[in-house]
Length: 327
Image (tube, rainbow, N blue to C red; front, side, top):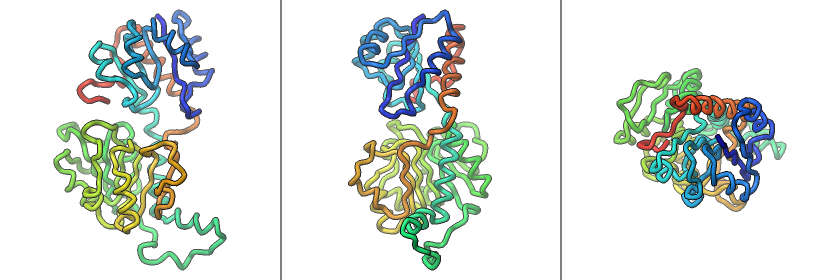
């Protein structure tokens, strides 16, 4: 068996470290691993590999991989893969679901707490050595998470971890689900289907987007939906940028309808220096790092190794991407 490892990325954290490749080679000495660090090596590897361990594959490249039987992505998102072409040829696709759930959930609660305690304002005044105690009045007073409603769009592995942490702070948790006839999710008080979006939004004080990008979620939250949220609500997006209308978010922040926002994903990355998001009031912008944490690659490599053992035995893979769902 020949496996192509092609995980080059402009973000250093998403590149597999050398010791990760060494771990796989030591654990599977009977398998030939090709670690491609250039376009030429990647092209040669695709030509005759059985398995591709990569985060991106376009249709034109896939056409040059006639022997590919399984693709495993080191990421959770799969929109960088040519899924229709892969599925049409019967290639199995799996992702690294779950590995980033806890760090992203912790990040989400961290920014929600920061927004509730007015930390963006505090830190701004700290930089200017300004004692801002008397600014804490009216809408600038900190608010409690306890008793508020957190609305989740997406209750997969990430959303479930967010829900349990929100409940620990005394929040009520509601969720918007693609298929509301599924089993109840732990820590979610009430679930709503796609046709109940307005009902879901009207009660949501903290809207958290943690869903994958699909035709159903594309552009889901626009100006009308933001206006449906209670005044003073905050929005946190750790899902995909195209689910949320960025221009509508900016307008609602400046108009005072929203009490704040935190984004970890953007329509353009890196976010350009002159983008209006940089100067929005009460906003926390993180550079797509909510999933970063120490020990990431050890767990990612271990998951791939487990799936590789399953693949060799002809068993079902963990976190297989389903053609009918697209994730």
